[in-house]
Length: 478
Ligand code: NAD
Image (tube, rainbow, N blue to C red; front, side):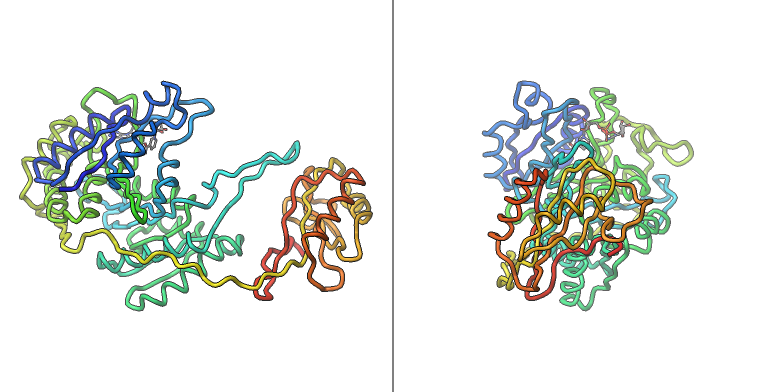
């Protein structure tokens, strides 16, 4: 018996959760349930996180969480419970299988069977944002080696366990050479450890276009958080419907399972919603807790139900579907099919389904780090970069001298173009004048000088070399 935490959520959540739990019970899932309240009611009671402290305790004790969609109230101040849960519990891997069920669910891609494995904790979702000048805000893209190693290893281990042939990595490392570049580099390193699994890398833009056009050439896709978010919704939709896909959020000790869609408030309380996304989430959960025989039985019964043409309104199509049913009736049809297998769709075999057992990340020995200079980011409302260079030259020291000014990344001094549009946010690069490493004290002196000359420094970024290799990007056009 496994004790799990269940939250019925908002909108269509309670109906699709009840339907899913009925199926789990009828299939003989060995689970005991602790129900918690999360979402709209909790938010509106004045708790901006949408969840009470006692509920966290339940989730952390049981370690397995089946969650229906929740409504995040409109307006500022309410934190997304999904993002908080993923990050608090270290659920680094978001697994989203996107499969088409041709000819029973209408799709342009009859042979699609993709699993998208999305990094779930970092990237632009670190949520570190600042306004720095009148004209400029920034959002930090944080990519870590542990983050890359954990998700990429997860993708290869997943492929190995489920007999998948290929893992494809999507990044934009032709532009983001350090951040996306790290993800790609770690992918190449880890791929070598799995010689029997094919591997390839695509630049995300053309890769996403290829996936939307010819998804059958992909198998497992691993990518960064934001790309994975967008890509997996597209993949689920082109497979047939976002209403059919479930997802697993996996961490080292806890896991959360859900449908990928939201709470569809307009359909709530009408016994109309398709419970399939949450059923798929629950099947991923059963595999995770080692109840693969039950998972397989439910999935085959579900496939048979889809094949029978018993469809909820969202996938119902005249000529393909045989009967339009509500949430409860759909669940009853799945229950009646328990023990049956689909005749045309491929029946599943989950004898290999179980939680992946990944090694814990081990920190590598630290590299030798040397400080070569500093970027001062300056709020300045002038237009002519040569004038700013003159001002910045006033604070050159024996150790540090101005070498470049960029605006939104493009070099504007020395030898900039008049045509380049400039905002009030300037990056002034100071580098060690005699090639010798500098210290933090030299930067403090530079900042003191800047203060004396009333230069509005809004932030600094140190320029390092790791093991002698400069580890910062050049200015565009440099
Ligand atoms: P949504 O996914 O709820 O709905 C999008 C469309 O799909 C709607 O037309 C809806 O009727 C339909 N739909 C979704 N699920 C369906 C199902 N199971 N059966 C039949 N039709 C279905 O997205 P939205 O309208 O953008 O968001 C509504 C609320 O859900 C928002 O408050 C949002 O914050 C929340 N949300 C929650 C989660 C989550 O909890 N994981 C995810 C996404 C959105």
